[in-house]
Amino acid sequence: MSGPSLKKQDAHDLIHESALNEAKELRMLLQKCVEDAQKEKAIKVAEVSIEHWESRTLQHASSEEEGLYKEMVTEKPHLKTLVIQLTRDHDLMRKMVEQMKALLINNEIDERLVSLMDSLIIVDSLHNDDEMNKLLGHKEFYKLEIMEESDEIA
Image (cartoon, rainbow, N blue to C red; front, side, top):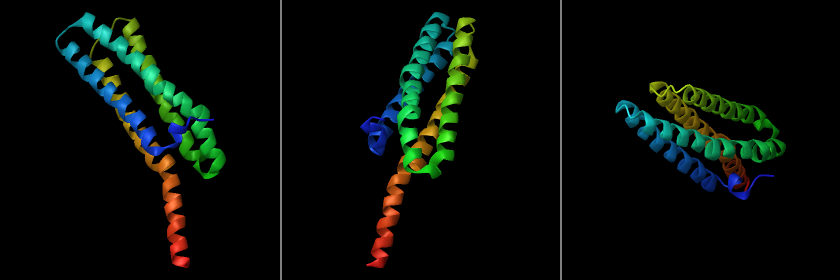
């Protein structure tokens, strides 16, 4: 069962927005460190960035998969394809974080890390839009559609 904030579009959107904004700030900081050849600082920023993606976005993703997505498909089976797509987004983000870890382990602190962070931000942003507008927004749209139909009947 998912937490109540996962089913509430506004609250859920705030969770996504705050994590994504933090990720963007970390990305900008990493870019600056790489450009300024501050390798030690870049390593620390990369470590914090990886920890951020794992503890904020990917942990949230796991919660969605274990609760919200299962509940939504149970309630509305026609959302199964969308849930599969959203889960694939999560898988892509997990793979990119693993690639970041590999670069860090190999002490390869360069533009590739920044590029991976850009990719993560793009995928996460698109994912968040789909989740808000197609999964959670669908519920409101469905209610609105029913209300409009009942107005036509009355």
